[in-house]
Amino acid sequence: MTSLQALPFFAILAIVSATPTQPLEASCTVTSYDNIAAAVSSCTTLTLKDITVPASTTLSLSLKTGTTLTLAGTFKWEYAEWKGPLFEIKGSKVTVKGDSVTLDGRGAKWWDGKGDKGKKKPKFLRIKTTGGSTLKDIKLLNCPHQCVSINSASDTTIDNFYLELSAGDTAGGHNTDGFDISSSTGITIENSIVKNQDDCVAVNQGSNMIFKNLTCSGGHGLSLSVGQSSENGSPNTVSNITFSDCTVMKSDNGIHIKTHSDAGTGAVKDVTYKNIKLSGIKKYGINIQEDYENGSSSGTPKGNIPITNLVLNSITGSMTGDSNSMAVYILCGTGGCSNWQWSSISISSAAKTNKCNYTPTGFTC
Image 1 (cartoon, rainbow, N blue to C red):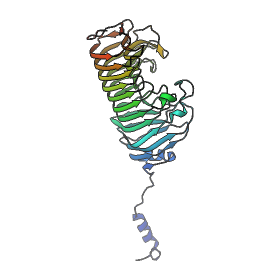
Image 2 (tube, rainbow, N blue to C red):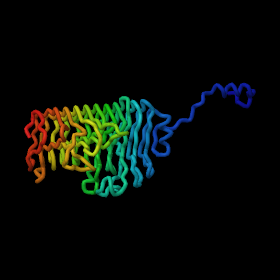
Image 3 (cartoon, one colour):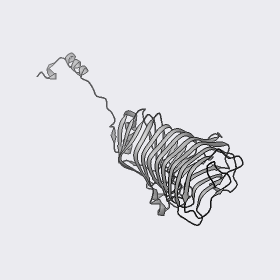
Image 4 (cartoon, helix red, strand yellow):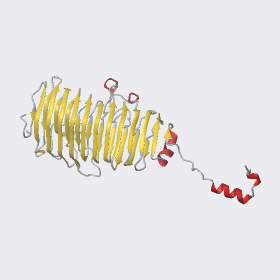
């Protein structure tokens, strides 16, 4: 074989020019926080595994359109008192899937029994995906504060999430909402488990949402909380929402709809709860109130956010029998409730009789 030294310069140049060069690319499998940004900017199929995130830092992933992201191993966040979020995912038409992954919020470092007060606690995971995105097979462990915030998202499915905060029952977990949804449309959350100390689901603002096959334990139930999320003074509207085939157990409420009387205008309309099974409910099986102010019930309802076209079908189960327990509580402001269609409501073992100032069609209070 002829050596390069024996060839004239122009021949060597021709050989080098004809040899393909490989561009330097970031690895698409990442195990260090410092290498994530390069991988996200260059890969549309990537894996993040066993990541530790520095304190006061959001693991923020702005994924390329159509990206498939796999999360594997254990993710941890260093401690700091700040508002978070610890993790944020953005992108259109993305698939985010877990491979035996645990996102460990290490909530006990923040929990103090004071929720929004006391230590400043970070929200955990914020989702802002669009375009037919899917997130699935992910476990969140011990969220410091609210677990999953879905904000300004659309056409997104969340499937097989497991939110495990049982340790917070005795260690000071508080305001640990499971799924909070605001300013979003076209959201489906299905086949998921939430064990926490606040709302399993809380819809604040948005439309066209489906919640199905959820199991909720330890918290405050399947909720709409409307009036506190006004953006730029716009009305707070929740519409076309369906909860189906869900189980709520060992919780303060089964179903809870609250409108905020200290807020502006808005509406709750076209909401359906069907085939909801309750057990071990401590306070209210069904609690609908238009008197929420400053985080609690005032007892004086207003009709500033009317609730119309509310369908409840096949809501069954039992209370704990605690002395203040009640199967159904309805408190509507003047003109605040209309066209409710209820059927097959059967909730046993309440200590107090139902209390309603509005009577739905098909139901006797």
